[in-house]
Length: 175
Image 1 (cartoon, helix red, strand yellow):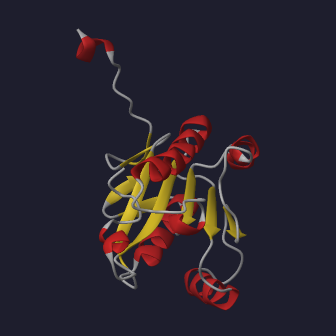
Image 2 (image 1 turned 90 degrees about the vertical axis):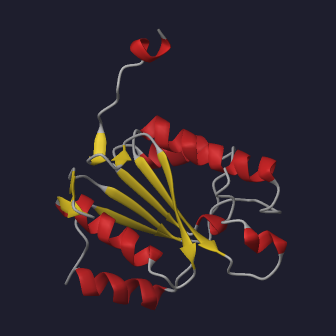
C-alpha cells in the first residue's frame, strides 16, 4: 500500500541521474577532477545539453567556489567560455550555511536549478568531521535548501586529504 501511494517523482535536472529538490555529494581524492566534473555539469545546465551521456534540463546555476583563488577560478571559466558564463552566478567565500542564514540563503537560490558547493568542508560549521551528529546537522541544512528551492544541490568533498582517523571519512559522506 505504501509503495502504491507514493507517486514517482520525475523532475530530472539530469535525466535518470540528478533529481530536482535533492542533495548529492561528489566525493573523491583531492586533485582528481571533482571541480572540473562539476563545472562540466554547470556548463550543461546553463546552456542545455548533455552530461555523462544524459540529457540535461537548461536552467540557472549558483556556483559557490569557496576554496580556489580568484585567478584559478577565472582561468578555469575562461577555458570554458570566452566571456561571462550565461545563467551562472559565481559566489566566493568565505561563507558557511547556518540555521541563522538558512532563510536568506533559500531566498537567494530561488529560481536556480543547480547549486554547486565546492567544497562542502568550507560551507559548514563542523568542528569535528568524524562526529556523525554534527555532520548530519550540516548536511540537513543543505537538504532543506534543495527541497525548498527545488534545485539540485551538489556538494563536493575531498577524501583522505589529511592523515589520520578523520580523513578516513569522506567529509561526512557516511551521511
